[in-house]
Image (cartoon, rainbow, N blue to C red):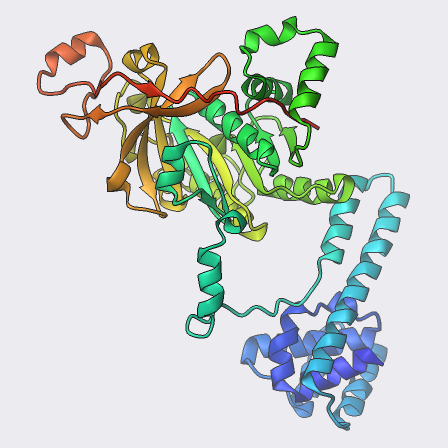
Length: 472
């Protein structure tokens, strides 16, 4: 019986204990005696960092409160039988069959729980896909870290497999500052004032990823999913967003089908009410999409980070610094868990709204956000920039390259079509923070501070690379 083989080796094989105990659960043992013995072994190892002897285990069982005489006798007899040690199987055989045992039991328990939930009218049957997904994902994690000295060849291959480990942008400057694109297992955030183009940036990048045959999950907690899809429509069809309703259904469908011909990417846009969802809901959504639509995202967009909820804190119970920092940490953990990049946005605070140059202190609500994310940009909008159809990007944090090499750069922007494009221009800054207030009166008073001066831009006219969208 595999249960007794497992329990016997938990008593006598310390190497086996170290390798499998983190994956075993008492619910996998259906017999009361087996469950009691396993629980006591686990408690002993957790407390003393070694397996118990027969005598120690019998004492632990005897001292258990609330244990019936029948269960006590059954557990004691089991310990006596396990102590008559047979020849130990090989460690590889043990681990292989223990993993199979855990998988089988997890799936069996999930099916029983799902059946019970179906019969219970008060149960949340919507959780059944998540329960089954968790059961099917049970496995032993054999990876115990990257051995720096012995894994030189694997690391070299990783350095030269850009497409596998990074999601590239279609904006040359963004690729330059990220060394070819956004790495997996990272969290990137763009900050801007209201109306500067945060959602435009997210929608543009999502459209680019889609047509690069990537699976894109766009989560919105601000605008309706129909409005997000409309913006991506305008971006890909290269049409003014206000002109989209003028298309007939036949023309609209024809253009999209033509644009999507050969496109292997998929886009899911999911809306949540503001401040109602966080990592727990996002994880459940990813698992449900996998089960119901066979969809696994390559990249996730979240619009936007400050109006997510935290799975660790209830809003109002901690200050905004702790709350937003917790959300960032949870989202970054989600990126690592699913091996993908996450891109989100945040607001600038009141002081940053009127600035033509911003720093970390202008990030809304929490400096903890800046401490947690992997890369942080600011999008800056001024009247002078608007006249030239430009938006200024400034790096505020970058773990991927030296910020000093390209601290500021401009990107072409077409707000009516919800698109960004490369723009080549020179930026002349007289101070690192040119102006602290955008009003003309204040600028006159600050004689030593000057606005950034832009030469006549040379725009990249290749704006027709996008032509379609798939929204499900």
